[in-house]
Length: 106
Length: 247
Image 1 (tube, chains in turn orange, yellow):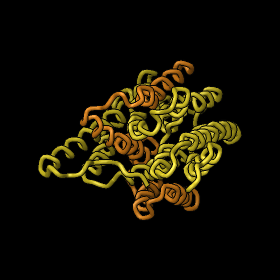
Image 2 (image 1 turned 120 degrees about the horizontal axis):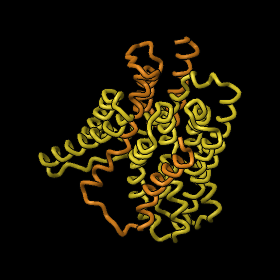
Image 3 (image 1 turned 90 degrees about the vertical axis):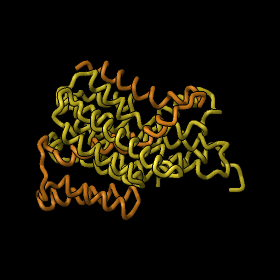
Image 4 (image 1 turned 60 degrees about the vertical axis):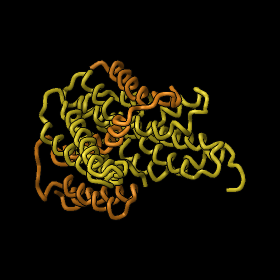
């Protein structure tokens, strides 16, 4: 793998997305459908990352009560809905995971 | 605040407001560093990536794709889609920064991460005194950035010392951070539908060639969300915008 090309390419697509609107300083307005679609991008993308990561943590489907990734993720969703606080979600979710994986040796 | 906040004060407040989010980013950065070499990225490239790209989730995804042997164009296309959410953030912030000169807008755009967006958009909600609020933004960005680069370096070193760390499953830190970021969006039915479809499709498409599952799943979720929103609106012309909320 060409590491310099990888980093340059990732920089180009990351910075251009972040800079595009700041660069034109609001002289461009998106059509309404695009504004609407953009609102769905963060949760859709992040969920498409999370679900396989916790359901198939070792590459294969592991839909089971003994899958610590899955159980801790469900727990973290409940904490996030209940506490509505990002830091508590991260800390409690991670503690649950460490407890299941190393405390109980799942 | 009756008095005008000084640039230095704003800068420090920006860094301070970002601290809780940095706590979440610490394991994230360290784990990125430890996973780099086993995934096929050299230690130097891992640190260079954190310095130059500065996009935690994309960097994680890139490692996963590298380890799976994906081709360079696929990794870059996936990075693009994963980062499209920053277009939403910048659309929100552009009214606050459009008056600034380009030498300000460029670094601020570079520093537009999920965490800094969360901190900065809260700052702009306080409408009292925004004259130096861009210093708050800069403080938040530099706090996130220095922590991210530092943690990557720590992770690279830890990975050398404890090569077994890869198998500990600490990449769960990424999932749990994302869960904490997604849940606040779940305020209406189209958003729930978008998330459920994206998640289910991501699992169903996990074996697609070239690791294209993430892209397909995200696009399906967005399409379903938009369609449902339109459907709701056509039934109830006065329905509110499907939107995002940040705590």
